[in-house]
Structures are given as structure tokens and as C-alpha cells.
Amino acid sequence: MKFALTPEQLRIRDAVAKLCANYPPEYWRELDEARAYPEAFVDHLIRDGWLACLIPEEYGGAGLGMVEAALILETINRSGCSGAPAHAQMYTMGTILRHGSPEQKARYLPAIARGELRLQAFGITEPEAGSDSTRIRTTAVRDGDWYIINGGKIFTSRFQHSDLMLLLARTTPYEAVQRKTDGLSVFLVDLRESRDQIEVQPIRTMINHETNQLFFRDLRVPAENLIGEEGRGFYYILDGMNAERILVASEVLGDGYWFIDKATRYVSERVVFGRPIGMNQGVQFPIAQAYAQLEAASLMRWQAAYAFDAGERPGFEANAAKLLASQATWAAANAAMDAFGGYGYARDYDVERKFREARLPLVAPVSNNLVLSYISQHVLKMPRSY
Image (cartoon, rainbow, N blue to C red; front, side, top):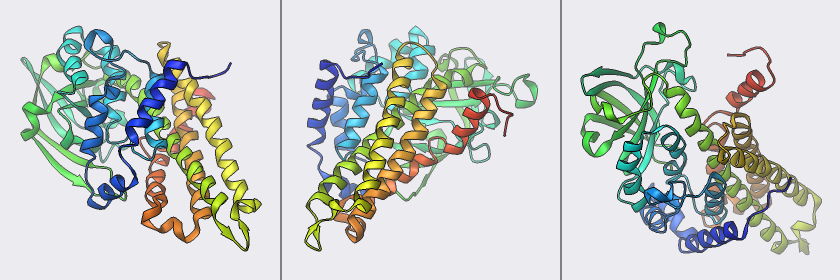
């Protein structure tokens, strides 16, 4: 089996790279310094239709698949840009397209495709539950035609730049369900109507990645905004999570290839002791090793994306792709930092900024240790470790 890009996919890659060329390293350095959101870049992605790539043509989108979405994000990051400020608008489609009602799709998807609405916020993680989503404490209680939501979320990114938020809450108490994954429900929250009912506390992080802690106090959400059946939300978000893993792995791979491209050019041109430092095996080998790891991780990512497009739930492939991509890119980041030496710490070379960004995927959107636990239990059938 060979994963090769089609002529149409190659045109997509070239078009995205051309867009990214309008946003040089100076643009991202200034944003990093100011801790600012890349409004112009995200608007450009929306205007050219790339963030609507997964939305079916009948709703105004491009009707592309996960393979193309993965290619778009990889290209963005390999170009030196960042897909993280906008990627949620892609991976949330995994839940909405497979489980949203025809009425919900007709109401929201065309406006998202046109760029009139942004779906960038995904509210799942809570301070006490952490990676155990079944232990969340945010509750949604039915009250006639409404659900009343109380609780809070943490690490909810892009809230300030989103019109809609996908939110997971408990509609049946944990103690009252037979399976801990039951009793969870997903809601599409229209922030245009309810933003003032949500308290927001921004969280400053080591990279320019806008994220927040949210507090809900009697947040009223129309019952018609419930995705699918009440109590089945955990299973619905799995499709969103698999999409998230594939797409995050893709942009992480883009960063890894960026490090390799940057390092190979530098070590071929940097002359010390009368010869390019790239002639030294101590410099060459870590870069070559990281590149081999990236290529292997990329194959797992493509396998996951093809399976997703075939209607499968590629839990292992999606999680393994994220695991391997994050490890390979971290190896590439360290190889590049070693190759650049002191210049790697200099802001104008961009390595230090990308280096900081490359550390996050090892622990988010899911910790690699949790991925290993998942593979151990659900794939290799070893005893549960947590």
C-alpha cells in the first residue's frame, strides 16, 4: 500500500503554501511577542475556504475528506505558520457531521462555510477530571425547552474568537449510570446569545496559544442544540477526538518537517573550522534520525485519515499518529536546536519559538502516557492501568 498525493491534493498543498507565504516569520514573531491572535491569517484561511474543507458541498463547504484536511494543516505548519488558532473548526466537524441533526447542520454549517460564524471552542476538560472525561462535573439539567448548565471547563482555547462552542456535560449523574461513559451529552452553544452568562479567566502559557478557564452559572442552552441523543455524548465526541488526533498529528508533523528543512539548510551553509558543520556525523545523524521518525509517523497519520474517511473509528491509528508525531517532532526540535547552537536561542531564527510550541503535543490534547494506556488496554488487551 502506497500513500501518494493525487494531482488535486498537490494543488491543495501548493495553494495553501502560497497563502502562507503572505505571513512570513516576522508576522508570527510579532504575534508571539504581543500574545496576539492571528486574525488576518485566520480570516484569510476562512476567506479561501480552507477551514470549511470538511463541510459537505450541500452546505456550502468544499466536501473534502480528512486526508485533505490533514494535508492543509501539515502544509500550514511546514510553511512556518500555525494551524492551532484555527484547527478546531475542522476537528469539531467529526461530531457535528456524524451526529448532528439535519436541522442543526442546515442552521449552522452554511454560515460557518461562508465565514459568518466561527466554531473554534471545544469545552471538555475540567480541572479535577483532567483526562478522565467521564468524571466531569459540569451538569446540564432539562427545564422545558432548555437545558440549564452549571460547572466549568479548563484549557478551552479560542473562546474569545468563536461564535459557537461544542460543550460536553453530564445529563445523568455519574453514580446513576451503569457504564461510566453513559449519561454525558454534547451541546452546541451559541456564544452570541450566551457569552455574558459565562465567566472567562484567560490562562497565560509558555507559547502564544490563547486558552481559558470557563465558569457556567445557570447557562441556558436551547434543547434543540443537543447533539444526537441525551446521554450518548461520550460516543459522539469520540469521532471529534479521532479527528482531533489526526489533525493535530498533521500540524505537528508540519512543525517537524519545518525543523528538518530549517536545520538541513543551516548545517549545509554554516562553516566552522573550515567546513560545513553538516559534514559532521554528530550533527547529521540526529537530523536524519528525526526525519526517519517523521516519515514513519506520517504513514500512521495517513492510515488514520484514510480510515476516518472510510467511515471507520480509527481509535488506535489516530492516537498512535498523535503519539508518534509528537515524539518525532520533539526529536526534530532538539536536533535543530543542537544544530543551531547559541543561535537557536535567538528570537530572529524562529527556532526557539517553534521549540516551545513543539513541547505541547507531548501532553496535549491528550497526554502520551494516556495514549499508551489506551493502546495497552484496548489494543493489546493488557490489564487496565487506570
